[in-house]
Length: 225
Image 1 (tube, rainbow, N blue to C red):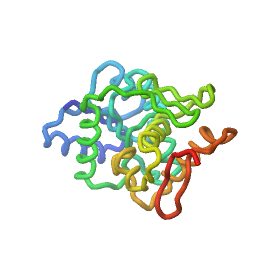
Image 2: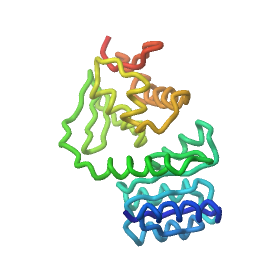
Image 3: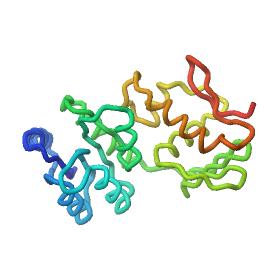
Image 4: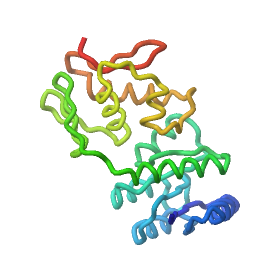
């Protein structure tokens, strides 16, 4: 597997390069955002490991531009910023997962395997999902309510799709962590609550009936009351 590592801290870059090479990965290094972007756009990689704070061009901007160039490449973002807002900015920029420094190398390997496995699994054909006047087209990545197009980020889309596929069933936070975030967030994080609120503002606000419901202590359910 060929990996692009974009990291400006020499000690971290050397540590990761050595560890990944010992695991028989092929690793290209870039020490700033501009060089990382050029390499990502000129070479096909199986995965990108991208530091969020980079000289030249921020990791967030590199992520956005790489995602526009190659929508499918898995991106794991490294960050020293562990606040919820920082994680959301990284995910909304197009990152598939994040890892807060300092981290165990074994955890990084596990997340890489999960990201690459998800990419290589062949997707089954997906039908358009409906609930009341809400529709979600997984293939076209389109969401409409009452005929009105709704713009969602990639993570919001994945969350809404999972809720719709389980409409009428209570979905726990653990379910969402496993299926939408690949168990990447600790259970004490409020990222799920933040994204549920984002969805409510876009999918339910100004529409009737309300479709996203919270069951305190149990989870969330999409249904028509």
